[in-house]
Length: 164
Image 1 (cartoon, rainbow, N blue to C red):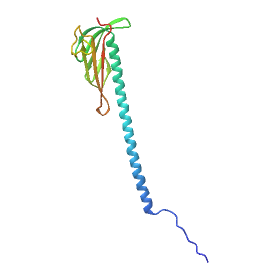
Image 2 (cartoon, rainbow, N blue to C red):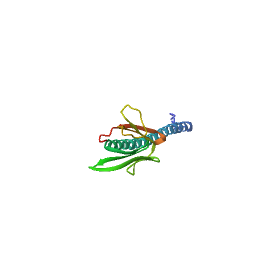
Image 3 (cartoon, one colour):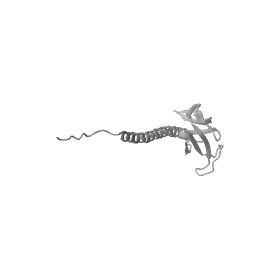
Image 4 (cartoon, helix red, strand yellow):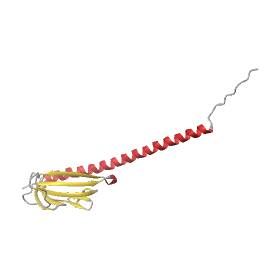
């Protein structure tokens, strides 16, 4: 008579426990990595929005300052000037108010950590904080605070073309 050998199939408790532990460790590592990726995406999106705000504000200020026909009052944080819009002369003010820069009373940008205007006789001249008739160039320094308190700084110089 022949004897049949019965083969046992399946896994032992030790093998199943080991596989579950390894799977848990891999899942933990993958989860931590996924969280870091999401945090980086949020950080990037917020800072990209902050940079877009600053670029918009700088372009708007450069365009407005380019059309200045007369400077009425100027300090390191504000500028009141006369300019033409659609052929009509008007007086406009750019100023730092708390954490925002305003133009003609409307908010131009927020999240402002620093805003300064400087005035130059020549492009490579010394910066001044007040306007004089000899000044021909306006410097704009703007800093905005984004995610994780990252500060983005922007600078521009504008030579008003209609200045008398």
